[in-house]
Length: 79
Ligand SMILES: [Zn+2]
Image (cartoon, rainbow, N blue to C red; front, side):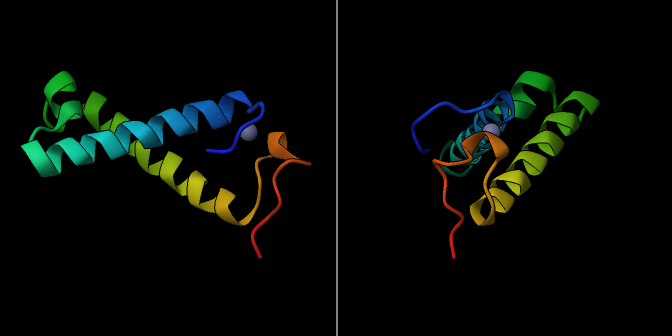
């Protein structure tokens, strides 16, 4: 994560991607699915969270090639 100020979208997406990464880490090492533990296995709520994490990850990937508007000036697109 780069320093400087980031917009709400960046923060929400960052938090969701972090949550997804931690969840997968726990699942891989301890066989504990945090989202399923808290929200239930494949309930509507947990599906929504999984979906949001997926969308957030996709946004992160897109932002590797272009920058979020809030990062204008401080973030150079990778070539
Ligand atoms: Zn942003």
